[in-house]
Length: 191
Image (cartoon, rainbow, N blue to C red):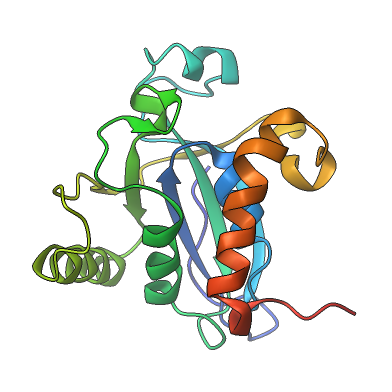
């Protein structure tokens, strides 16, 4: 279900972002490594049936996108920071596709939680479009989050739990390496 954006009872501020940029395993693997990110949960949003299963979403008939829901501390990392990273780790110009993953469930989307998030999303898209960062137009959907459904347990922390799985080695690992190189200063420190 959708999450509250307010402060937690301990007084620390937490916000939530919900992003779709292809396979949720790729996004989760990246966002889990950022300082200020408190939790990343894979799931589904933007569809028209309640409580969809992975198998249903994979058919493309439910209207859901694979998403990650990111709980973060805005005093450490901002929503804008999350979106700037989002636009570097997926191709926002391919409609309903990321690499070999094809279908509406792999669309690029920002499901905003507040009017402020909507405004930031639209600003970044306009800036990147004006700067012609990509040769093709950005097709990222900006829509209100209505409901977030958590994905099945085996999808959570997928890259961390399955690093030798071929998809993780061929698709996710290179994305994570590129991200780590570009955003080294934003990574969580190893203990």
